[in-house]
Length: 183
Image 1: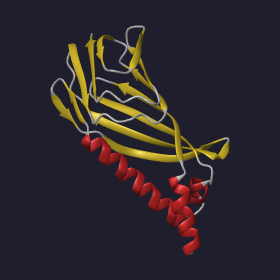
Image 2: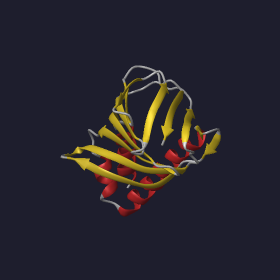
Image 3: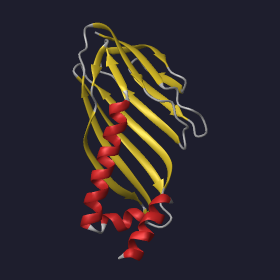
């Protein structure tokens, strides 16, 4: 068992993130989003994890609390009221081959919006981006994105959709602000 543990520790260190996507759905009283991280897993660490109930349970627990810790460090506000994101669920899966695992997190937080202008702000520690990512925001049908403030490249599609393009090798801004009008 010692050689297996040793192998797993080495294999885990070799898992490399290659891409991430986030899908944010905004309603008048909550934001629900999915974070999906894709990896290249040369030694198939996650295959071994999902095939062993004890390892799987330990990994899911570790992933849950690591993500919750990062969420707890963020300072999210909507209309100057602090919001507390929570990990609701997570999943480990594979894309075509066992060398291509993904980890998906389902996250939710309550918000208080009002008719008219609303402001979403998120402050977090700026960090080096190791992989490209996309974040897709979908606001309610009776809304319009008024302005966006962030370092990342973005585009507003129609009135209520926002796409953010993060690039490998840059630093994240550490601050995001989205002003949107609810009809």
